Amino acid sequence: MAIEFCVRNILLEFAVLLAIFFDWGSCELVEKFGILNHSVTLSPVKNGEFKDITWKKGKDKVAEWQEGEDVTYFGSFTERAILDQSGNFTILNLTASDEGQYEFESRFQKSETMFLYVLDNLPQPVLSCDFDGENITVSCNGPEDTRFLSYEWIFSGLYVNLSESKVQLTSPIDIPQSISCILKNPKFTSESSLFLTTCVPENYQARHRYFLIPAFVIFIIAVFIISRKSG
Image (cartoon, rainbow, N blue to C red; front, side, top):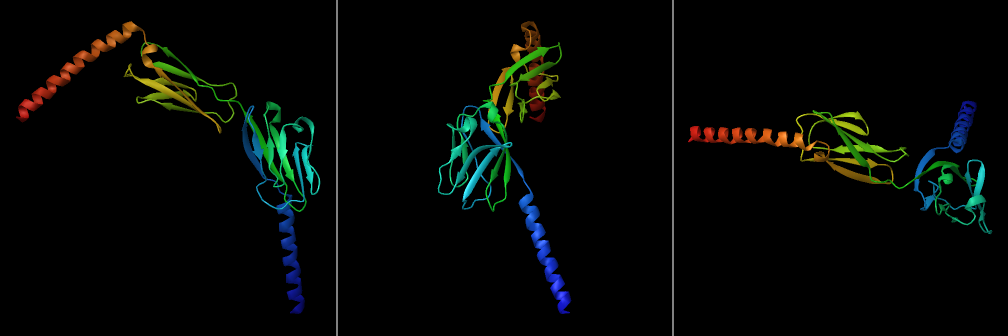
């Protein structure tokens, strides 16, 4: 009985050690987003009292600190980075070359890995359109960097998505109204609108107006007749 109890305890301790080993050895990749020419701060997920801190970009050190010593910065980060004793690593004046995988290391702490994406300012989308005599096709032209970019359309009528950035408005079309395209990424939202009158030739718009006049008259007459009967 005593031997069985001892073996059970040994197995339990071994299982705990395995759990600790695999937990310490695992790295969760966190996504972080910064803006070109702005600053961004990379922070360890777990807070603690650190005696030493090392930040790496890929395999290269970018900042290092030991208790009782000053912070040492490496490479292009020498004059545009700040590391504090809480592990926060701030990069100033972000450049496109700052994008990449970063890793936080400290003794007796689980290493943490994150990927920094550097995004440019999101410009207003440029809307263009084409009319084939029946339908209007509207295109929303965004930036060259389409990573994490999503499109949203605002239109009160019916439309068909030809692609994420292009829609076709189906008949009947209320020409005086407008359509809007919204671009979104993790840092920005940008919107532009387009009046459909700019898409359709004036002669078609004139026919469209003349067609609406009889329809409106018929509607008024129908209302009048119904009201007379009910009276």
